[in-house]
Length: 115
Length: 110
Image 1 (cartoon, helix red, strand yellow):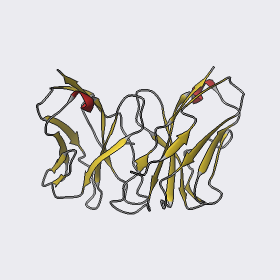
Image 2 (cartoon, each protein chain N blue to C red):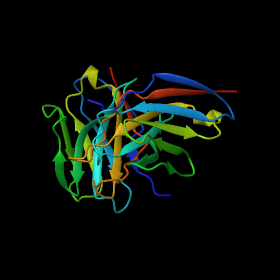
Image 3 (cartoon, rainbow over the protein chains, first blue to last red):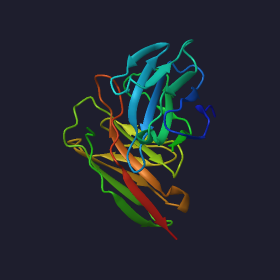
């Protein structure tokens, strides 16, 4: 069964450092999502891509976060500089298209700890 | 903001049916109800979704009331591996996004 791949699974960094997360969606999935999940809460959407284009990044803190999906396949989420409050799980999800009834499938996530 | 309300936690005995309620009183006529679960430290796992009719798959059944203001997820024979946080989500029609609440922590007891 096809899965969404993410790496690394765990990342520890010091504040003010740069970090990057990678996501490879299910093959053929045009829509890719990045979420942030703080402990005890549900995931919060950061950015949504349709192929290589950003559809929604209204919740992305653009002063320090950036995301790209250059060839419309895999994607990278970057934080520079990291802050203590960025400690969270970062989840990637993909779907065939953002249509009614379409299902998002999630990767295992990257757990970030900022010291 | 999330359009659903769920109890923060529930217990269920192993082998019994687990019934997880969800209120979505402001749901629109063309908005789907989705259920996901998240086992500790893993990514969310899709369970089931529906619009008006009841739905069943190999994992669970989804019962939606006739007025669509609430629904129930049923795990017919709960096992210890079903211990997880279960999220009920109403999918936004305008952009098809999922707005997540805090979910229900379901604990299956031996």
